Length: 281
Ligand SMILES: [Zn+2]
Image 1: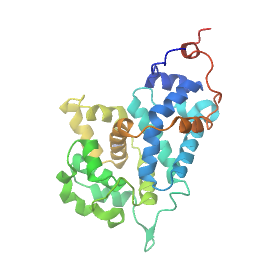
Image 2 (image 1 turned 180 degrees about the vertical axis):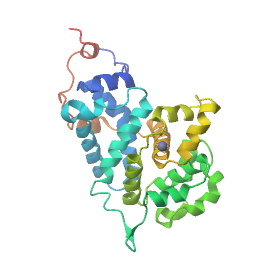
Image 3 (image 1 turned 60 degrees about the vertical axis):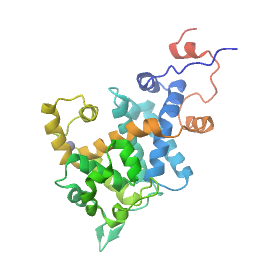
Image 4 (image 1 turned 135 degrees about the vertical axis):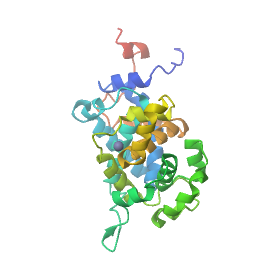
């Protein structure tokens, strides 16, 4: 009997071979990242898991359409910038889905739009802005603390700015977005509002990882604190960094279900693993 194969896939292999429609690369993608995306949908679009699974199928179909055109356009530079790009596509799909519904209005005005969101975070230090952002997503204080490694109460004063529609800074019991239609809608608008002087996402990641000197960090952080597009990306990097490690694994049956959404050979692999991956005969 052959020994159980060690996990040979890395992000770079998944990125490289996924665009060729390699079934093993996609199985690795689903095993590595499926938990993250299903978990995010559970938070952003709480409800039955089936709606989330169908959105993941939609995501895979989008990534694979036209010979993996969307997937080819994703970052090769780092796993986490790649993961935020795929997250953006997934949340765009979620925002447009019937499960999210249409954003609500009060007296003919949207409950939340980019101007209102800008006012909520205006003038606050970046560290406080990201706490507010994650709280508006619907994360509990305990989750925010694990994600950022600082207690959210440092920004307690700013909690007064949180709109009532997102539970107004009250303690949540679990990570659940209380205003999916509004939040998914406004995040999609923030993602679309990229400006010419926005720093590259990879630069934001390097700042979060502490790899940038104070001299370069200061202007970039100042930009993020005044730009909703970058703040969305900044918070997204925090999210994918955390849930990539913390989300519960998904079952082999779920992985196989998602595989059927992709134009790869559906049959279980028969050739020995290394030969299939590296093309030996
Ligand atoms: Zn920006």
